[in-house]
Length: 163
Image 1 (cartoon, rainbow, N blue to C red):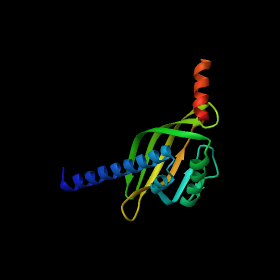
Image 2: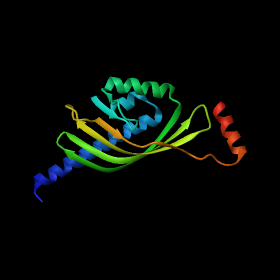
Image 3: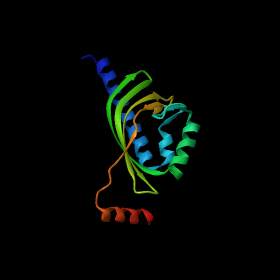
Image 4: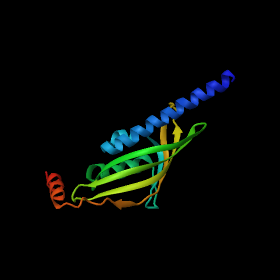
């Protein structure tokens, strides 16, 4: 193997790692409902194409506005876990394909939902070298999680939510 091909592989490995770290920051901030860290991983001209269909959320300001409301007053507490199945680099652009599962625990009722989804994230290297999310596409629909059958455990969970 020539030194130039090993240099390219080393840079590619570094880029994949940087994208992985940016994705971790994004999902970690989502779970923590931490708007500033969530937005830190997002490009200024980002486009979110949601599972609910049009319209898309276009631009960092629109994403911040949408997620600010959700993080501050959203009806549920999110818990997302994800799997990245593929990262492909092409110059200053990269796409990441994978799946995620979001467990939604609603604040005002004893209700939980599970959303299984596939995603495509398109990342772009910024002029300063950081990778930021430029496009996000996902699909999926929430499915209620069946509650436990005993009335006693249901009463306990309702009592905890009221505190």
